[in-house]
Length: 213
Image 1 (tube, rainbow, N blue to C red):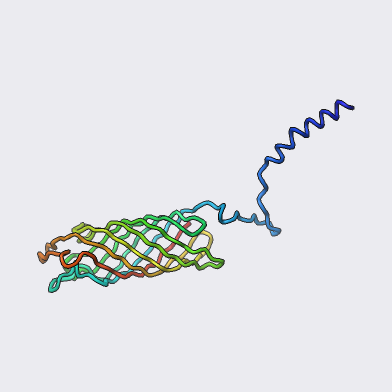
Image 2: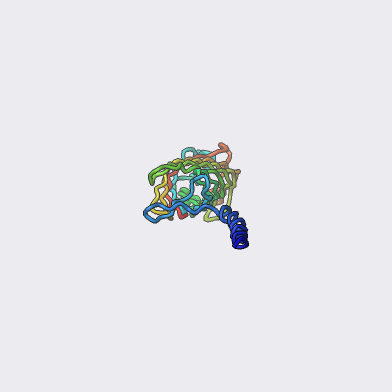
């Protein structure tokens, strides 16, 4: 009998540390749904976005000398971005954009391309709408039908909002400012030297996109 008690005590000493070392069970709501972890403990997510943009120039004198056809006018385009977003709302992203612009018939089709990276803040809220702000820097090229005649740097600023459609999809829309430089170049059709009357050009833009997380 005494031996049985000693064996039972030894077994309890071996099992007890294992019980205490087990991780706490996830909290479960009375309705049966598992309560998600606190935001500070949640993992960052990847957000893929496909967006459409319309743009209009604010200052295009660098590419449109007085008395010559203007190769940089209004237009639209598409783009894609991939963002790593943390639970705090801050994220880092990379993006590729292509815009098709009216070129006053100097080009068959004016095409501006940009590769950029930046930071984005999607403000956490208790509702399905989230204010969004981002800034990005990159490089851009412009020319006739995907040929690059001039290159330069680019900065883009954006403000808008994101609406949660469900747990996977969101809709983002807003307005922005694009500032870019252009190296000097000569257009073949009219033999005009461009990129001499100013270093920077600016455009305003409106954008809408679908986000998948």
